[in-house]
Length: 155
Figure 1: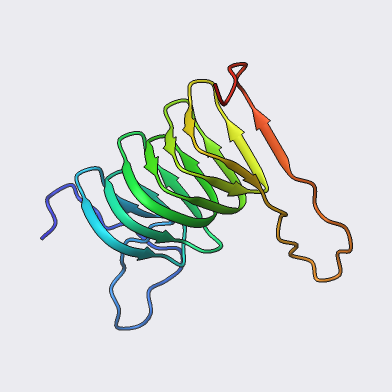
Figure 2: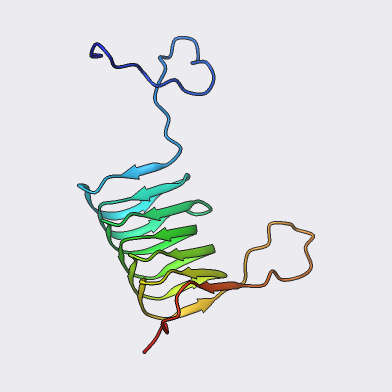
């Protein structure tokens, strides 16, 4: 099965007795040739470069949308970093990053928003309070909205 120069990728730590070594990824990745419809959920960080239509929920994890991605979905995650096209509602419990190649049509809801020069946004932005992880915290964490562009968001 292995070619002359190919080597298996070791996981961190030894394999369990009777189980072969296997490759481990730190992020679930969907390539740009993949076309997918439905409900997608993940309990780990995810990167999408393909075409997706439906709903995406990665809960308390990060989602990266690549520059070739075409996503038509409502998204729920902790942090989302967008370089491609997204049409749908985006809800992030921590922060939304719109990079210079991002094109968004839909409403954004998050306590933090970063918009790079060149990013396109057609929709509304709603500031939401950041979820407090410390049960004893008494004060609300202030929202952070930062732009790296001097061009107005809305015409």
